[in-house]
Image 1: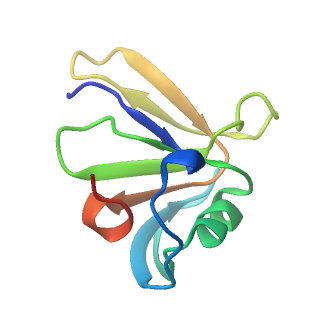
Image 2: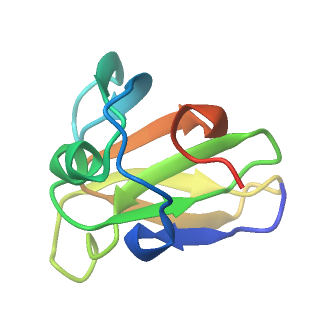
Length: 106
């Protein structure tokens, strides 16, 4: 696994109304592919609050979740484990998984 990096809404580039395909993961439900606007407001609506992008993997993939999901008591969703099988994090609330070229590029 690569180094975990974070990005919040302040580091986004510009609002875009392009459509993107993402994997939407809601607590207690099967993940599903959805097409949505790529703008900040759409991402915030999907995760029900301010966004945080986390990069757990070496692949060009971002997990976009609610920045305050744990603090605000959102329902636990999925656990993330490292390569050794150790618990790395628990994601609370809805989250999205998307290719980096779909939303942000550095």
